Length: 387
Image 1 (cartoon, rainbow, N blue to C red):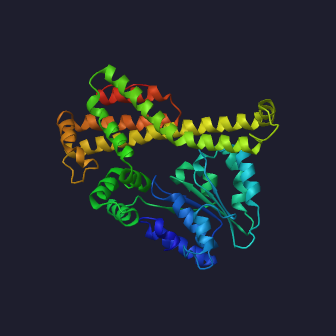
Image 2: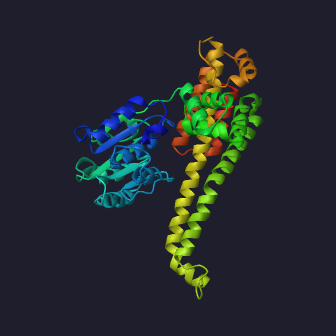
Image 3: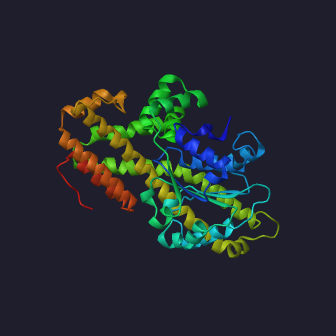
């Protein structure tokens, strides 16, 4: 098993990265790895990091490969953030850490999973380190598209683009790697629209499937203004619950680690002393946790909006009699009823409303208002709610 085996449907990318790992003349010190959500950007970056460090170019079985893939190699730093953005101070610390000279491997590799979250001032701090890195340093910056980073980053990096894997490729991977039965694998691959992580969750977790069903039932529940507000409130509550299930265990582990660092439970350590010692760090931790929870909540709402996009896309396919498979084929009766009750123009307006809702989310719009406004427009596509 090689380091590239976790990438699905990315043969061209694997060929280019493998060549760079084995031939230094094909290597560069700064890469921008792009691709739609679920395509495997960070998977490709970490696999490349392992191949660069591996004595034989990424066998996947040696101690070096296994340590890198587990995220535990001291000369492969994997930077991932649950915060809304990276600050200037974050960038300074990252540049300082990147200067470490590797001990017994060729490179010090820095993988940044969400380079699109760097503010302009943070990018300015990093530019020199990216443009003129020391000989041992490799930057692997991951982002959905080249447009998501500043031109100053694009011009200093080698761009590599991952594609959305096909449903057949995803279904085969679910069967081969996770033992999912063919029918469930086909459903999950189709419903995830090529998002590998989402497909795995749909195939293996009943709760994820039930949540998706709740989201796809929303269009049929929008009968009047009152039902739009109820649906908006329910969606935010559902997303809040899902975000809590992700963030609560992380928060508890971080708080426990902080308290142990300052001697909670040790003899003679009083609460008053702990409060004095931990005050500043505890405040910073809670600030970071609040930011992470906020981002996770917005991510859950956006995931719901993407599912609604798939619903109305299917409605439009039926209305124009396109020769395309339905993403939500298991809902064909409901989709057909929706298609017969409206026009392609109505559906196009609804799709546009969902995209505007996603933009409002990205701009930190108030979640209840964003959801309620969207559902009003989905109920009546002739209404344009202005935020």
